[in-house]
Every structure is written in C-alpha cells, then in structure tokens.
Amino acid sequence: MSGHSTYEPKTGLERWLDSRLPIIRFANDTIVTFPTPKNLNYWWTFGGVLSLMLGLQIVTGIILAMHYVPHVDYAFNSIQRIKRDVNYGWLIQGMHANGASMFFLAVYIHMFRNLYYGSYKAPREVLWILGCVIYLLMMATAFFGYVLPWGQMSFHGAVVITNLIGALPIIGPSITTWLWGGFAVDDPTLNRFFSLHYLLPFMIAGVVALHVWALHVPGNNNPTGVNVKSKEDTVPFHPYYTVKDGFAISVFLIMYAVFVFYLPDALGDAANYIQANPLQTPQHIVPEWYLLPFYAILRAVPNKLMGVLLMFGAIGTLFVLPWLDTSKVRSMRYRPTMRLYYFIFILACLVLGYCGAHAPDDMVIPGVAGPQFLDANLNSIVWLSRIAALFYFVYFWVITPLMGLTETPLPEPESISTPVLSHPASAPAGATASPEKRG
Image 1 (spheres, one colour):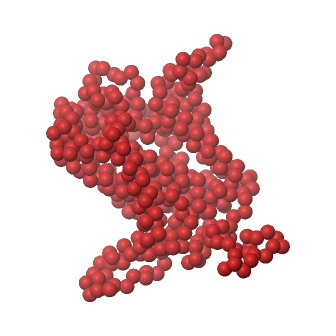
Image 2 (image 1 turned 90 degrees about the vertical axis):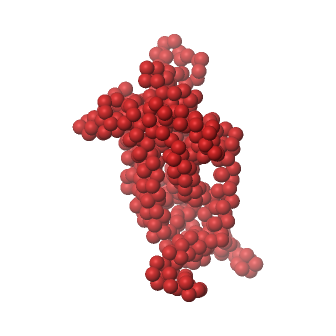
Image 3 (image 1 turned 60 degrees about the vertical axis):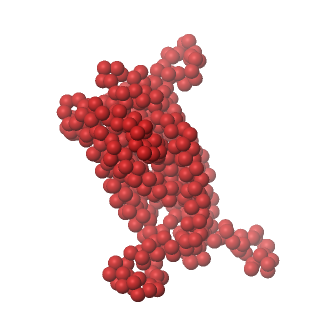
C-alpha cells in the first residue's frame, strides 16, 4: 500500500496548486515514491509496456482517422492512399497495424504472469476483474479495427463473426441487426465499426486508470506471493523500477520497430490485401493471430450455439478465476504439481492457436494420413482443437479447485527479504552463520 503521502511542496506555485489540485502529489505518490516490492523481475515490466502501447495506438489511431474514409467504395483505397500519399502515412499505419499485435503479445505475457504468480487472488480480485474487462474491450476493438481495411478477410470475417452472434437466443438477432445497420454487412456496418473502433480505446484508457488505482490499494504482488511486511521489503518505484522498466521497454520497442520497418505486413493475412468482394469467399476465413485460440474453441463444437457459448465461456471463466482457485499459496514457485499443469495449460493455448490458424479439414501432420482402420478425421485439426479446448476448461474448473485442496505446497519464505538477504534462519539446523554473513 502507498501509505501516508510524503510529498512536500518546494515552491510557492507547488503549494498553491497542491491546496487546490494535488496532481503533483498524486504523481509523486503513485510513480516516484510508491513502495514497490524489491524482488520484482522483468515479467512485471509488461504493465508499463501495455501503457505505452495503448498510448501509441490512440495517437496513431487519431491520425489515421483524419484520412480514413469509412465507406465500402473508398475504405480499401483510402488505406492505400494513407500508405503512399500521406506524409509518413506508411509509418503511422505500420505502427498502428503492428502495434495491435504487440499490444496483444504484451497482454498475454502479462496475463500468464498473473496466473503463474497468483496475482488474481485476494485482495486483488477487483484488480484482476478490471484487467479482464480491459482484455474484453481489446478483443472488441481489435475485431472492429480488423474490418476497417475492407479487404477480403475483413469483410468475410465480419460476416462470419456477426452471424455467430446471431446464434445467441433472444438477443442475438437484435445485436446482429444493430451491428449491421441493415440486413447484411454493408456500408452502415463499416460506419458502425469505425465509430466503435474509435470510441473503445478511450474506454480502455478509462478502465486502465481504474486498474492502476486498484493496483495501488493492495500494492504489487511479487514472485514469492508473500505479502509485504515491512519497509525493508520495498524500494521506491523511482529510480529503481523506472530504470529497470525503461530498459525492458526499450528492448520491446526494438522488436516492435523490426516489424514496423522491416516486416510491416508479416502479421497480416494476404487475402486482406485484396479489396472486399461479397461474391468471392476466401477458402479459409481466420481472424488475427491473437484471437485464434478462441476461434479454435468455436470451431471445435459441431453445434453453432454451443460453440458460441463455449467461446464466450472461455473468456467469462477468467472473471471468476479468483473464486475457483482454493489454494492459500499464491506463487507457483511453491506449488510444483500445479506448476506442471500450468505449463500444460500454456501448451494447450498454443495448440488452440495453431488449430485456429488451419482449416478444419487440415491434418495435424500435413501429408501423413492416419491408420487405415480409423476415420481420417480422427487426426484432423478439429479433434486436436477439442482436446486442447477440453483441457482449457478442465484446468480452470476442475484442476484449479482440486489442487488447492489436495496439493501439499513447498514451505514459503517468512518475508520477501528472506530469500534475498542472508539470515541465520536460512542456515541448516545446528549451524551458525558467520559474523560477516550476519552483517
């Protein structure tokens, strides 16, 4: 927790402003002097990465909106004009398009870190739920943005996804009609998606502010999962973590720049560089890579409604995770059995992403058929998707609750400082630490 403010205004202007709008005090308490656990590793850097990427996406998005034309006859060509004729348009468009992928890469790392170190457990349930809300808004924003180039994959992807929403009972058809703005994906649809894509990032920024606020109430979790017990366990956020995060963010930006300058189209689908044609459907319709696991879950079920419910259920499960985990130990450093299931879970997510990127009738091993006495579909992508999707739900709804009741965790340290500093308690029984080591 941040505790009592230590900020002291030094000039007359600061004292005047502090008595009326204590914004400098707020910045000092939340950024400069905020007590932060001293054992945070680089996995904690991605919160800062995400804040930076959100800012870049909003700024580049505003500039692109000045030149984009949300009309089915001009949208595709307006993107090409931005890249060719607008000053530095190629850079702004490349930063925005690749920035979405970098944004999702950082958020997935951030979420997997939280799962590993138990950062969703009490007293951080609201912090986790707000993070899930941000993730849900990001998915919606990404989907709406993917439609705006009005290429083949954009158009037909919008048709497929909006029709899936129509499968929901009672409310589905009404939501689909509202999104379409008519009876099919057309010009009103593009205008609605453009408006929502422009609006949602500002909503994300608002929820991020709440997310940061919720973080500063209980304070940061740490790799041990042990609560902060004294000032010896913490250091001021500045300069220790501003320098550390600054270095890590710089490395991340180098990777981002490689895509922007050298591989600007590597993460896009080739079909989306062809103008939308309602009369010609691509052979295989896929979303962007960061939505592929949920797309695989959707296709794993033959029933359309059940597939949609499972897809939304995969996201909804994250919201109730704090109450599914019954273990009193936060960090998986001290839960060896659960750690094994966790790595299998990561593998299942990667498998779902792989399956989502391939057509349902593709073989798991291209060119290799299954045994002749078995149906060839037993080796198909669909069955691999079903196995991975089954483990996804079993991990959260079965393994996580049961392991908290049955697993015997390893002993936890008494405090954050115990594994960091030499201490007589860490010596073997009967042994005495030397005076030098005690010091």
